[in-house]
Length: 547
Image 1 (cartoon, rainbow, N blue to C red):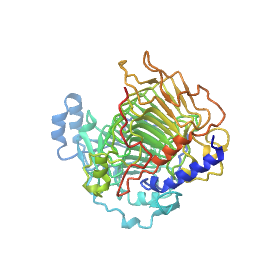
Image 2: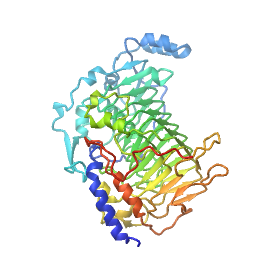
Image 3: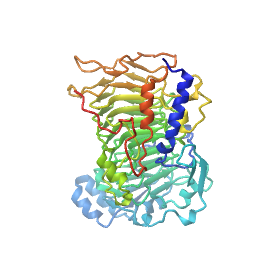
């Protein structure tokens, strides 16, 4: 007998809300954040001239001689004569708006910054507390405020670019339009090393117009690069590796560009444009262009990852290639909507950081984080191993003209996340997915899978996904059109029949059997000192390679 809609909704709410305590316990809380006015900002352009400061190390000359030649060598030797700073933070402190900070080849450990204590006694009164239903046991969050970051910039951050002044009006007054650029010919010639000493290696906070370029950054205790409440940012030709959680992260920021980035070894995500620009399908405020993200728990993720255009990129060798979701409480822009993935290669996302051996190393033996090998990926968030792209409670997204192959669980997976799971009122109405609907069914609706090539490598070799498309069967206006497999093969899906575009306007109920499995997987918690896979969940077992 078919379960009535209202009863099914209540069942889902009760099941999933019971999982919130575990599922959100490992989330990192940030202060209450707000979107900038996108009309007042733009993606910064690369500046080749203008005021500049030069940073170098004592061995920069030897590195220049060894690593560079020709014009690049001559330029760097000329810049070396102007070097006044041994640390990047010192140059940031001295920089006025519009300054280029030129960083010569060397290893930058920022010793003065890492000596600053956390928590900072001078900012002990600068915390913000707010209600976050479902967060840990108390439902309360107490975090450093913006004033904390402004007054004590290096308590949590190895390099901090703090743009707003004492007026705290969420507009950049100082350190605006700063460009920090490695002057070598390859990103690896300038290395910024966090050594897990600070939460963030680089933090740009309300630093409108920030441009980071041409270096390698490693070993944060949370984020290698973090851009927050910033109107206009550009990250280009950078390698991020072995961050405890995120490689490149932006949050409540707009007019942004991730370009030619490489991210690997992140405990959560290599690329994370979270709480993306609110455009509701009228514009894409952040572009992700030609990135290569591999060897992370998730290659690209974004809770409330709205208004993001990701194209011509590669996501491979992760547990899951791409996820966008409406899971976690406290993220502005819920529920997720209106992002687009186009012309990407999403393949072989079968790495399993949730294995029994990894569980023992990362969690069960209670080994302090400081004693772990920073090159071992310890997962900080759950993900269904073997999945190419996952929409977990998202609306009106476009997945078009991608090539998706050799993901052993599913090429593309989509399922519903009720509003109660993220701690919001399930009795209200939502209009973020089009017409007003009961808030419990405000996801996943209006997603379109168009003209993707499934189970076929760029060279035309068959490399099937476990199933090309997996859907929990919930929602309205979801549709699949013109997707194709290799010659002689058919698209595979669960359910076996998928609606063509534009999809049905009638809201469809979730398949109860699929709901039960999803709810079980939501209870995974890395803080459990006797960690085990949740009963009834197979996300953390490597799927069998399809034939």
